[in-house]
Length: 469
Image 1: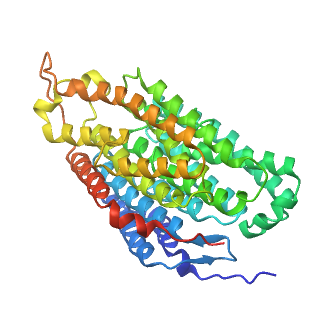
Image 2 (image 1 turned 90 degrees about the horizontal axis):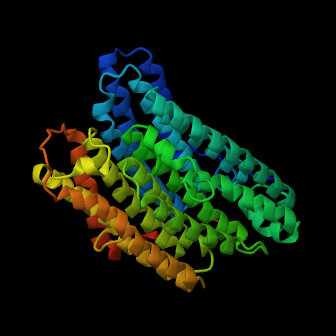
Image 3 (image 1 turned 60 degrees about the vertical axis):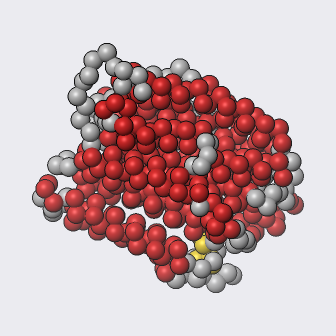
């Protein structure tokens, strides 16, 4: 029988976040409406402390090997918790005076906790539990406004999530039957000797569930409606942070468990990668609503992010490519949404006409982030894409890198469709209210995206290191 290692310090960032959520839930019921910001301040402190702990953590496993702390987990912790700080900043103005302000902060922390557990899951049972924890609070956040678009967003998000969640649980059951266990070390040893058909069906079902959290094909149906119907800060969260946990879980599953099986895992992920980037780009071409455009953009970005996942265990560059790319994507995508949050009255592309003459700094941040999503140097996404392309070539999927390059060029069209009107003269000058905390966040995210791209040389080696096996 495996000895259970129950040292809570090994998962201290997760413990801090869970403790902050519980305390916030308790004190939020007693705080007056004007003081509920204290729950948000507590969440901010928990995230900041979690980042400090994550930076100093050493590689280990916790709780009988169910949770792994290694470079993938550490990087995911830093990026997810850092992204949570950005989301908290974006919600400062919209939530001020809201009677359910403390509830929002609690739900956000629980959803983030689920994403963190996804990133470090080393056992299928923990993976399933983390999926549920990352999903259920997110459904509520999508419909937090309780208006018609929010209710529709939450309903569609929930229906797709429930269906693919059942598929994931079914896949976990089948993998347990085929591999005689749920821990990754046991599955790595036993799956090659189990039933190939059972293992194949189980792998496909688990993949479908995790792609729902990542927002990739075939679990992408919820993304455009949920993003358009929810508030801009929630949309920023939904398209960024759960995705990171899901992609880390997919990479770990492929690199640790499936690399030695006869199931064509890599080929399947490569096909879904190409489908995600192509569908997302083509669907974004003629979008007018800026949130819906960014929603389809995030589907296409999942396609690029799946490239290193497809070659997990087959290419040496795969791990650092994925981790650097998710960090760059998080900064750039959150920066683009921060501009949308800063200008809540501007909902469609034509509303941005002439904005460069009135808000030049904000338009500058928008241009950096949108061109960054294309992969324009010197932004972080450029270096992340370059690493992902190299990993695909090294892993024997040169055709996927070619498809990704074509899609990258094609994506420039719809990003320029948004940028071009900002520099044109508007027919009438309408005053627009600017949310200053969101604007400051946009400036910071755009700056950090460029800084991370320029600092890629010293950062990339830090993302190397073996996974816990």
